[in-house]
Image (tube, rainbow, N blue to C red):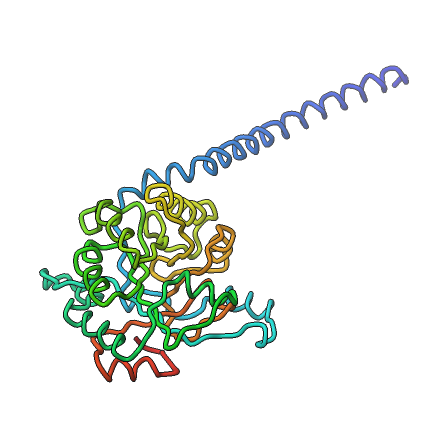
Length: 320
Ligand SMILES: [Zn+2]
């Protein structure tokens, strides 16, 4: 074969090769581009789809059985990685009582409600027991200040906290708080205000006007934050706070995890959103800088009088 013919053949081979390469790569590139576009559309539209979908949902109930009762492993690991000497992490003994419904439950078949409920007369007796025993009722914000080293811890400190913002907070709890002039913290699901089982906007305004109740954020839709996509956690935490602040002209600095469910990401979001504290459903009574974003809480149940006071002096709270 002449050198001219060989060059022509080589040129032909190269040109055929590049055509093949073109044919092999182009569909892949197209495929990747399509994937990237679909992913981009999904990521940017997720919060919107999520909002549309979730605003139809009902709240989850935090029964004794399904709430988080232990510090999740990723949070434990982060705590040990960033461990500081105990001297810079002073701890305080402050019981934070956890309540949901305070009413006479009409529907005897509503087991969840029965489990989470405390009858109004019992609740009043509990408040009276604590007042008579000389307890000082603090808000979550005030506890946050103590953890920051601002101010002195009062004698026999205690917090009353109420999750979800059910209607009975306005009609049953508030009159009792006013009667004994004690403070409380109510964690509100902002997307459910005015819903069938919840306080109306006017009732919430009345609660705020009492000056006895700190309003905390309990997300927009009451979804478990553990293991959720970052934009969803961010939306639930941030939009919940903004809605309360803009609608009711208040400053919201306290947060409660729905179902007590959280992980390291949820803590980071709450921290980044400048909340001062967050409460969990992990039973306990010792609060510190280390657990300020998962403060421990206890359920008083139906204990009253000396039984309640003894309960508060326990050191271990494995059960409610
Ligand atoms: Zn809740």
